[in-house]
Amino acid sequence: MGLRRRSGRVDADAAVEPPGDVTAVVGEVTRRAGEATRKAGARAEHAGADLTRPVRRPLTASRAKRLIGVGKAVAPLLAPYALAAAGVLRSRWDNHRAARLGVDPGQLAAYAGPGGALHARLSRVAEALNEIEAAGEAHGTDAGRAFAADIRPRLADLAVGVRAAEQMPAQRRRAAYRAISGELDRIETELLRHLDITP
Image (cartoon, rainbow, N blue to C red; front, side):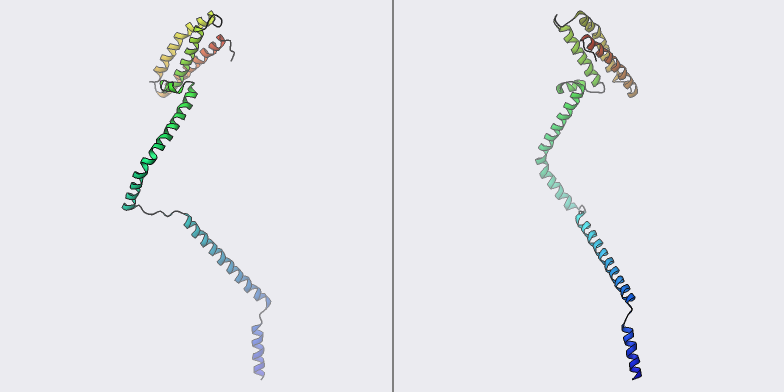
């Protein structure tokens, strides 16, 4: 009987665990459950990313033939729209360039090339001189007409200079264009002074 009591006591003592050990076990179980949850979430997120990424199939001969066939069927349908869009874009670009040069879009071809902007300025100054010469007695003055007569040969020389500079190497051409532009600035300032406009 003593043995039984002792064994009963030993079994009862072994069944009872200290409270600190239970807390540690519960904490370990909770930690492992959290890790498992995080890993499962990461796997699900990775699987979701794989689903959203397009699957690239290899290009086989039959797939290439099918794509060519679809292109042949769709291209004639889309070609008119593409041409219309290209025409609209070209028209807008031409209008933008013409506005920068100060000419009509129909005259844009006459001012193409590296010296196009200077040619446009020369033609505008020449038109202004024509208007000064053609002005009636009420608006035109002898000094204005004399100025137009003096400046016209200089404009012709500058136009020849612009055409000659177009054939020069880029660095010399830029230097020539700067000189011609400076001369045109001076002529335009004098023209405004003859028109009683102070810049």
